[in-house]
Structure formats: C-alpha cells, structure tokens
Amino acid sequence: MIVTTLLLSLNFVLATQDSNQVERKGEHQVQMEQQRTSVLMRDTSISRFAEGIDLVGNGRYEEAVRVFKEITAEYPNNSRAYFNLGVIYKYLRHYECANIVLRKAYELNEDPRYNEVLQEVRNIDAGRKKNP
Image (cartoon, rainbow, N blue to C red; front, side, top):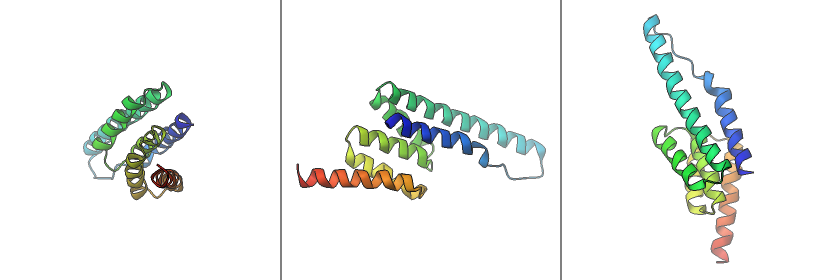
C-alpha cells in the first residue's frame, strides 16, 4: 500500500515534468541554458524520488525519510515530496510528524488525496491521544 501510494506520486511527477515551460526571453542561448538547468534539476529530483520509493519498497523507511527530507529542503515548494514523507511517517506511526508534513503538502497543493490522508492521520492521532 505505501509503495503504491508513493509510486502514484512519482508517476504524477513524471507526467507533469514538462508542464514548466521556459518563458520566451528573445535570446535563444538564454532559453537553452534555462532548459538545460531545468532538465538537470528535474532529473535529479526524479531520481531522488525514485531512490526514496525504492528504499520504501525494500523496507528501509528511515533512509527513505532522510531522502524525502533532503528533497523538501532542496525543493521547499514540492508538495509531492512532503506528501511522500507524510505517508512514510504515517506508516511508521509518527503521527505528529505526519500531520505536520501532510498539512504542508496540502497547503502547497490542495489535492483531495493529500487532505484524505491528512484526515486519516488526524483521526488516528486523536484516537491515540484519547485512549493512550
């Protein structure tokens, strides 16, 4: 289940990777350099996502947490990285951490799936606090 959720996230990143078009500046060289930089950053981010998902698939959750924390530090507006981190925290039963990063993911992108998982975490955490 956790790997499927993270793979859906990676598939979304791959599907939307070309949606960020370089603005026309009138200078071909400037555009080409921007495109090269964008491709490099995108490829690095995607390979890091894949690494994190692979770690989860191999049961190496703490290492996956480290990878997704690094991605969120490098790309602080990447809602998918926050979502993946939150899903892993939920799986590890670190509900307070999951709540924080899932809330951040939802603030960055009001995807209903983010809110659904966030509400699950909040309900679990509330029940846990009510019945310790």
